[in-house]
Length: 69
Image (cartoon, rainbow, N blue to C red):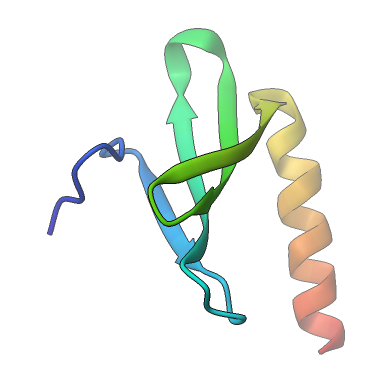
């Protein structure tokens, strides 16, 4: 199901604390970026623009933490 306002090349992750908090991850291939944005209900409260070449390091870090868990 498509979510209005979210790129087809992205996803939303709901915060375990609730309160309508979420992390949106969207690819922006034309700009060479992945944008991580923090949302509270329908309000974007912050963004981080990660260069595509840094994505493998982030994936490795997340994988390492998951393996340790």
